[in-house]
Image 1: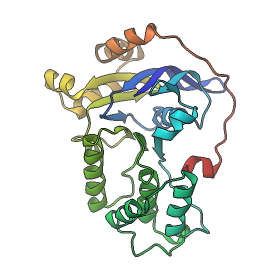
Image 2: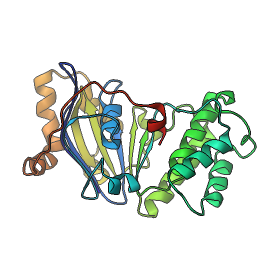
Image 3: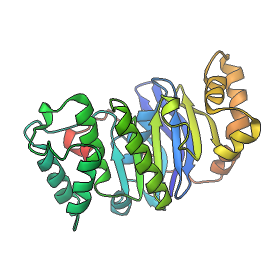
Length: 274
C-alpha cells in the first residue's frame, strides 16, 4: 500500500532522514519507534507531502503527491493545529467540506461522542484544554475515513479512557482493512497493537521486523528497541541493524529511484491540518 524507497531529507548539510526504506502491508498496523530526533516526524511529513525529499514514495502505486494518493491518505499530526476562531463543530464542518464528504454527519457525531466532545461543539479551539485539543485533532483526522492513516504521536496528552478508545478504533480499522503507520517513542502505548515495527535512530532505519519475526527470537519489543538504539558504537550499530533490515534493504536496491530537489520547507497551518 505504501512504499518508501531510498528517502533522504536534508536540512543544509544535516540529514534528518538518511536513505530510509520500508513498506506498509495492506490492512496492517506498523509502529514507527525511535528516540527524540530519530527522524520519525520528518519521514511522516515527507510521506504526506509537506516536505521535499530525495527518493521515492508511492501510495497504492501512485506518487504520494498525486490526487489519487491524497484521496486515500490521511494524517494526524503530533501537534494539534486548530483555528482559534472556529468552534469544535465548525472545525468538523470545515474539514468535511474541504474533503467534499457526503453522509458524514453520523460519523462526525460518533467521533465527537467517542472522544467526549459532543457537549463542546460550541467551544472555540483555543478554549479547549490540551487533552481536548488532541481529541479534536483525532476526530479531524479520522473523519474522512482514509484507507491509509498516518498517526504521529497520537496518544500524547490523552487520558487513559481516550487511549483505550483510540486503541479500540485502531483495532476496528485494521479489521476493516485499513493500513496505519503510528509514530511514537512511548513503547508501552503500542506494545499490543502492532503487526510490524520499524525502529529509527539518527535518521536511519535500525530495525524492521514483523511481530512473528520478533516473537521467534524470544525478545520483547522493548528489548529490541534498546538493543538497536542504546550503548553501541556506530560501526557495531550498523552491523547489528542488518539482522533486522536485510531482506527489505535488498528488495529496495532493485527499485528505481525518483529524486526531488531539496529546499527549505515551510508548511502552512491549514495545509498541515488537511
